[in-house]
Picture 1 (spheres, rainbow, N blue to C red):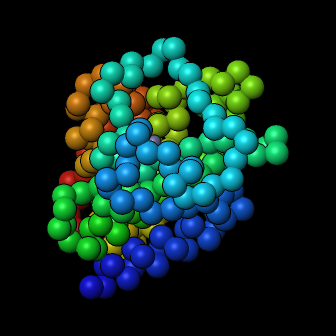
Picture 2: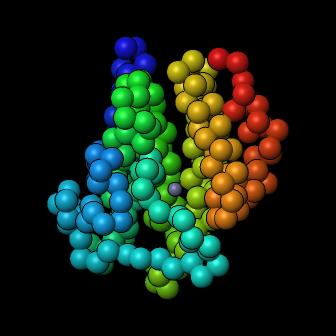
Length: 203
Ligand SMILES: [Zn+2]
């Protein structure tokens, strides 16, 4: 399938491009994408301290990683902040088309890389105080990923990736709680007309 090759190639290229930021990028079976799995341990990532960030303002109810496209774990190694990225091998239904699975691996990788970038720049993360702006971090990752996909969208496959990402953001944004807060802040940066257009454009 051509789509598989396109997204698989783009995934590998993207991982290479950001290898200076983190070379710890792993594909994780869906059964291990949960808070119970010690992902750093399972993938033998070397670290001194796993970092936990607090956001007192965030409504964390029903905000787990189960079924998520990916997760970024930040840690200290030899006094330096670093990130490891874990991408869900399949965040869609079991038996879903392989090209769509790769599309979501690609989109999720970009999203998680933007969390690692955000952490390295300490924009929405404050390692010293162990605090973060969770909504700000999610908006940063969504915003950067949407703009990236838009910049690539002269390629028909990337146009599909942009559409999938935008329509997913809308669906998740309608779920209430913190997810709606994220969507509302994202819309303030991009404009709901633009997201609506991306979500429904003709392919
Ligand atoms: Zn995220």
